[in-house]
Image (tube, rainbow, N blue to C red; front, side, top):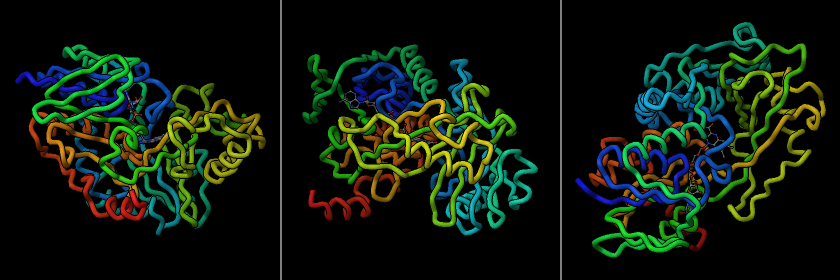
Length: 391
Ligand SMILES: Cc1cc2nc3c(=O)[nH]c(=O)nc-3n(C[C@H](O)[C@H](O)[C@H](O)COP(=O)(O)OP(=O)(O)OC[C@H]3O[C@@H](n4cnc5c(N)ncnc54)[C@H](O)[C@@H]3O)c2cc1C
C-alpha cells in the first residue's frame, strides 16, 4: 500500500492516528498549528484519568480493554511513562451515576473492584473522608495517563515510522475533489489520497458541515498543596466524587511528588467559549469554590482555608461537548476518503491509543472491528439538537 494520508491536528487523537497510519505503511503528512504537546487545546495539564469501569456506558468498555493494551505497548516502545496504574476510588451516594454506573460496568465486564462503606474508605485510603451516607467503588486497574508524554510518544513513533510532521502550520480549509483530497494551509496546498481530521476544539470550524452540535467549554484544573498534618497523597488512587445533587469532581495523587501538589477539577462545570474567546485567567472565587468542594472528600487538601494561599497553580483547558456526551468517530458521511474524530466531551483521553487505531482502520480499510456505532455523527441525538439550533 502506498496511500498518502494527511492528518489535521497533532494533539491527542491526531498524534495517535499519525503513528498508527505510518506504522501500517501509509505516507503520512501531519499538520499542526502549534508546537508538539502544546497547552492551547485539550491535551495538556500533566494527567488524565484512565479507567475501565465506565459509569457513562458499559458500551465503552471493549474499547478501553484494547486501549489498555496499547497504553502498555506505547510505554514499552518509547521508554516513556505515558500512564500509571494507581487504582481508582469512585465515591458518592449508592444510587449516584458515579457509584451505580461504575458498578454496573465493573460487573458486566468482570473488572476487578471492591465495594467500600464510608467508614472503610479512610481506613484503606488515608486522607479520604466521604460523608457517612456515601459508599465507594474501588477499581484496581484505574490510574492516569500523562497527556503531554503521550502526545510526544506518538509523535516520536510516527516519525520513526517515516511520518512527515509539520508544526506551526494552520489548515485553512480542506476539500474532497473526488479522487483525492486538497488541504489548504497558510503555507500552501497539500494533496493526498486520504484525510484524517482531529481538530479538538476547532471542530466547529474545520468540521462545520457535520452539524454535530458540539459546544466548546472552558474548564479549569487546580493544583493545591496539602495541610502539613494531612496524610501524604503520593500513592493515593485517582478519584471521582459525586454529591447528592449529582455534582462530580475528580482528582489525582501527588504524581510528581509533594512539591507538585494534588490536582483536582470539577467534571463538566464549564462555560461556553471558543478557542479565540476562552478566558485563560483563573479567578479567585472559582479557586475558592474548588478548594471548598474538594475538602468535602479530602479534608487535608490546602495548607490554608484561603485558596489564594493553598493553590500552587491552575490552568484552563477546553472540552468539546456533544449533546449526548458520546464521541464522534466515523468515516465522513459524505466523503469516504475522510475520517473524523471529535466531540470527546471531556472524557476522551483514556481512549487516545485506540482512537488512533480506529482512524487508521477507517481511512485505510474503510471499516473497523471496533464497536463505534454509538459515535456515528448521523445519530438522532445530534440531528435533533442541531435541528433545534436551526443550523
Ligand atoms: C481539563 C480537562 C480534563 C480532562 N480530563 C480527562 C480525563 O481525566 N480523562 C479522559 O479520558 N479525558 C479527559 N479530558 C478529555 C481529553 O483530554 C480530550 O478528550 C482529548 O485531549 C481530546 O483530544 P483531541 O485530539 O480531540 O484534541 P487536542 O489534543 O486539542 O488536539 C486537536 C489539535 O488540532 C489542532 N488544530 C486545530 N485546528 C487546526 C488547524 N486549523 N490547523 C492545524 N492544526 C489545528 C490543535 O492545535 C490541536 O493540537 C479532559 C479534558 C480537559 C480539558
